[in-house]
Length: 115
Image: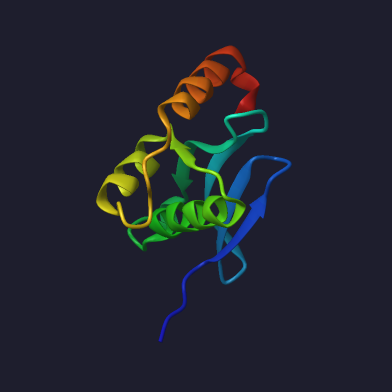
């Protein structure tokens, strides 16, 4: 039986990273909306070439939604991959409130240092 990647959340750096056998395999880059409306905002997903096609990006997206659910906040999927994953997994990825999307999009436009 194979196990999935090890997922590590580095909130301070806004990186949800995946590791396979200790080797870096991929990342979801994100930021948190700390003021209302609170949310986690996925901005970009990258999987290293050696790990493409192994489900790493999907595991990262799933873990990202689980973290948000545990914190009681929505995910705003501005990352195209995470947005597509959410469309394919509506049972795991509830749509975010429109206000959270507006605030996240505005914050991303105004602060390119977020990612």
